[in-house]
Length: 300
Image 1 (cartoon, rainbow, N blue to C red):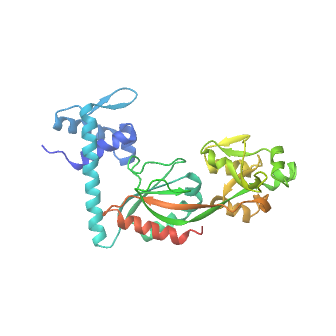
Image 2 (cartoon, helix red, strand yellow):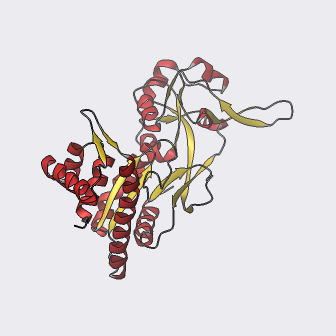
């Protein structure tokens, strides 16, 4: 008896979800139905794929080998379906887009209703990671990266540039006073990043020695966070002074929730924003549609 693609999908989803219960919810099927499908697959293969304990599922050696081939089969089927849809000029299939949470919240998510209206057959999956992800390992189709690109094996499309500014809320400045010089920042509570350390170098002009050179200011944060959105919320709640990108704070500045400070000594620093992806014949149309759409919507 041959294995069905539905059984392969159940097996892969159970492993990816971590439990049969979570997989049942994702596939909108019953737990008992998925348990029977998994048992039926193991019976057909005459081998145990998964060890079941009260706490978790663990792949057997045969299960690990079978998982690799099951993923490849399902990916090939999805590519074949996408190829046919592309021939009909109706892009379809899954498109997983990853970006740091601030960029996702402020620059991607607000436009996705309009994107889905234009391309209803594309199934969007939006993920947020504060660190650079491996596209293949995380099964990401498009990743948004801010800063100089390091990986030359990826295709990239420039989406624009974003500046960083030093900001504080009006309430914080009313209580603590506005710093009039870079040195005056030492008397204030500064909000920084846990990583990368590069983001704790603020684009402010400081004395670089007798030759008159300038450099960015390395700060020692009084509080640090891994996400720019967390730092933004801290600044909005009057905790202290932060340095954040325009793409996530432009509306705050425009509406007076945050105030740029030390603009006279700010160094013009443009962070390039790129969408990166691996080239794939089946994915090409979905990727192109998304990048054309979001590129036209962003104002970076």
